[in-house]
Every structure is written in structure tokens, then in C-alpha cells.
Amino acid sequence: MIRVQIPYHLRTLAGVEGEVTLDVAAPVTIRSVLDALESRYPMLQGTIREHGTLARRPFLRFFACEEDMSLASPDARLPAAVAEGREPFLIIGAIAGGD
Amino acid sequence: MSSVRVLVGTRKGAFILESDGKRKDWKVSGPHFAGWEIYHMKGSPVDPDRIYASQTSGWFGQLLQASTDGGKTWFQPGVNPEDAKPAFPPQNKSNKFVYDSSAETGKPLTTHQWYDGSQHPWEFKRVWHIEPSLTEAKTVYAGVEDAAIFRSTDGGESWQELPGLRGHGTGPDWQPGAGGMCLHTIILDPSNSERMYIAISAAGAYRTDDGGKSWKPINKGLVSDFMPNPTGEVGHCVHHIAMHPSRPTTLFMQKHWHVMRSDDAGDKWTKISGNLPTDFGFCIDVHAHEPETLYVVPIKSDSLHFPIDGKLQVFRSRSGGNEWEPLTKGLPQQDCYVNVLRDAMAVDTVDECGVYFGTTGGQVYCSADGGDSWNAIVHDLPAVLSVEVQTLA
Image (cartoon, rainbow over all chains, first blue to last red; front, top):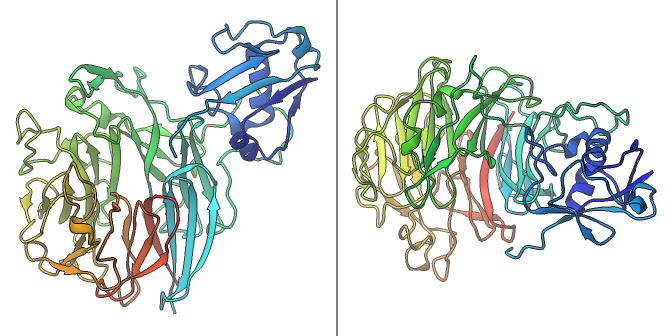
């Protein structure tokens, strides 16, 4: 079971509280986790990755085990602690100023 | 007695304001989609309880929401949140606005002018304006940034570009205004289902007479001093256009500077700024029962986006332009430095026409007497991006 933490507004959109848990077959990668997340919560499609290109939206970043995975290949394997559910995969919105 | 439902899009969510035909006592609901920018909401003329909303965010991109119960509950078309069964590949297309560059039906993705004069690729950013069909409840148009028009015929579940506009050939001369290169105005001709008008900042106005397959620029008579050729065919920063449904070939325009009118479906425009204290502004609208009665909110200048001398004034012309009178009763006449954005004015069709506008200071004002006097329905919403009103039986 993979644990995923998503930003407040996406939790609201998906109607979930706290962490999301997903079944993801090995190998566990950024792509396979996001595929599973969007499959389980289709209302999130296009909000984390652009439609079509599936590129990460620029104001979001991915972290695993305190490592910034944002620029890693989508097919990069996530750390064992994430794949085994001991640590969450984090999708974090940029801390931006303004209103 | 009629009732009215005012749909207010703001920087931090959507609000719905409801009243009876007296428009004195109001019920306010919201924020819907709290924390998200709601660029525009509009209900279907065919099925008024079917409302579409453009929900957008710099972080999470574009979403499309719909309601079939007058805004009490909302859903993303094509997504059933109760459906726990995984469905891969994903099928949610309600927020999938992809330019049609296919060889079969599309137009190549070209470039447009960037702020520094260089060419920049077309990139989808958000939906600025939603225009439901006059005849089909599930058909709806969307004006987007970077400028293009999309259509859905399934209630917003999926969208297809009408690529003839973007592919008109003048795209390399289009350029973004300060708010982005947005298609912000869509007007459907009630007498001719094949005719539509659109406006883009900063490209100008365009018209189709074949249901969106082909488009022609309708900017003759416009003068924009910031352009290398001030009377050029395209490049004008049109802020908004309004039309009275009984006279679909007469159009009124608030341009970056200048208030204009056309009586031949946009083929030629003439200036009607007349005695306005400034003819810069964003919004413009037409009285529901008097097709020669217009409303604008003059803004000091392109550099100073607030009313003159801190006095919020709506100006009304009862002569189709040129002769304008200030309407101030009930509006702040000192220390007021708000703006009224292009899609933030609307009129109802109650016997005594109601006029509404929202401000960047979070007020939504209503006049239940055609503009003679005003009351703030709400004072402290987030900055108002859009106002639409539905007159309900």
C-alpha cells in the first residue's frame, strides 16, 4: 500500500481527508503512483500533471524520503520506504506569496 | 413574481446571491470552491438550473464545474466521485482543453506576439468566459487563454476547439494584454444560430457566420494608439462587447480606450464616448428593455485602474452613446479606488431592469431601477472577477 499526501485544495477536490492510500504494483515509480492516484480520483486529472504531455505542473513538486524527486524521470523508482508504505510520497504546492 | 440569481466569480471562490423581484432582501451562499479563482459562471438559458463554472488555479490548472440544481451542488462533468472502481486510462476530459492541431480537423499551432515583440508559442492557461448555447442545454462555449474558442456538446464532459479562429492566419499579430492573451467575450446571435461574435485582448473582435468554421476580424473604425499601425486590422485591446438580443447587429464595445458602437454586425465601428469623463474602462452592458440604453464604468486611465477622484460612478446613455449621465446614488463618492472588470456587469430582465456590477474591492452593487439608485448586496467578498444574473420565473 502506497501512502500519498496531496495539497489541501486537491484533498477538497477529491473529497478525502489526510493521506491517500493506493495499491500500486511493482515497480513503484512516480508515474505509476500518479497513474493510480488519477485512476482512483479522476477529478484530479490535469491538476498535478498537464493533460496530454503529463508534465508536472510547474508550481507542484514531488518529494520522497526528504529527497526532491520533482526533476527525476517519471519512471524513476521511488525509495523502498515509500514502495513499502513506511514513508509517504509527497505532492507539495509551491509556497507562493501574493493574495 | 420573478426572482433573480446572481452568479459571482471571485479570486477566492464563487458566490450565489438570490432575491425576489424586488431585489431588496438577499440570500448569499458560498464560497463555493473556496480558495480557487472562479473566472466566470453562467447558466443555460434553456435550463437555468444548469450552471457552468470556470474554476482555475496557478497551482492546479483548469477545472470545469457544473450544477444541475441552480448551484446547490456541483460536479465535474464526466466524473462521478462516488465511483470507486478504477478506470484506466483516465477518462476525465472536462478540464482537457487541447488545441486541435490535427491534420484532419485542426490548425497548426503557431505563435503569437510576446510582450517583448518576440514570437511565443500558444499555451493553454485558463477559461475566461463560458457561454451556454441559447438552444441546447448541454452545448456550451468556452473562451480561453491563450486565445481560442472551444465547444462542448455533452454538458462540459469533453471539449473540442473551433480551430478556425486560432488558425485565422493573423495569430502572429495577436498579443497578450496585462491579463494575458484571453478570449473573454462570446456573444451568440439569437436570430442566427450560425453567427457568433468574440473578442480577444489584444487581437480585437471577430465574427463567424458559419457556426465557427471561419472567422473574420471586425475591427474597422477602431483606433489604438499603442499599435504600430493604430488602425490595423488586428491587435486592438477590446475589453468587452455587449449586444441587446432584439438588435443582434448592433454591438457596443468598451475598448482599452474608447467606447464604440457598430450597427452592421461589427463591419464598421464609430466612437460614442461623447461626454464621458474618461473613456477607459472594462465593462459595458445594455438595458434589458431599452436597446439604446447603455452602462459603463469609466476608469481613470490605462495606468490608473480606479475611478476618477475616488468616486465610483456608473455612466448611462439613453441615446445609444455620446450623451452620458453619471449615476451615483448609493455609490461611494469618496476614497473609492476599486476597479470593475470586464465580465463583472450584468442586467436582469425583470420589468424594472436590474443592473449589477462587482468590484475588485469585493462589493456587488445592484440597482433595481435601471441605474437610478444602487445598493451593495455584499460588501466584503474577495475581488470580483465576474457577475452574471439569471431572471427566474
